Length: 100
Image (cartoon, rainbow, N blue to C red; front, side, top):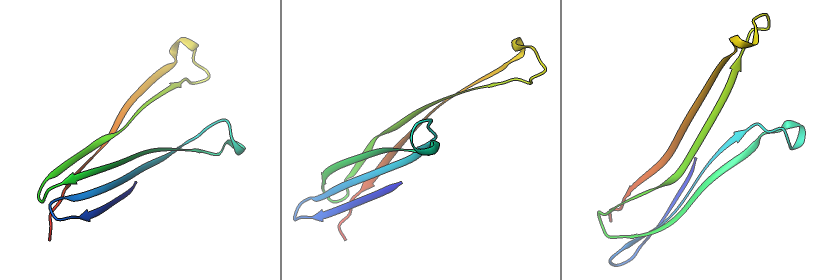
């Protein structure tokens, strides 16, 4: 995860420029020699906050579905095991500004 916050302190507000990036690699059948593909999710936001205020940033949501089959070669096809895994991840960022 890459996370950058650039604050700009002004007289009555603090401006936050927020850049966030999350990357993961997945195997693919296309591409060079079956090399993995990089999946990137990113968020850019600007918030003007007063001293002590809080901002909550979310939206970097990822859903994943994985299916697998297991079977011993000597068993009949009707004894195949099936498994399905569903997942969801969400990154929520909570920032509070404070003048020092």
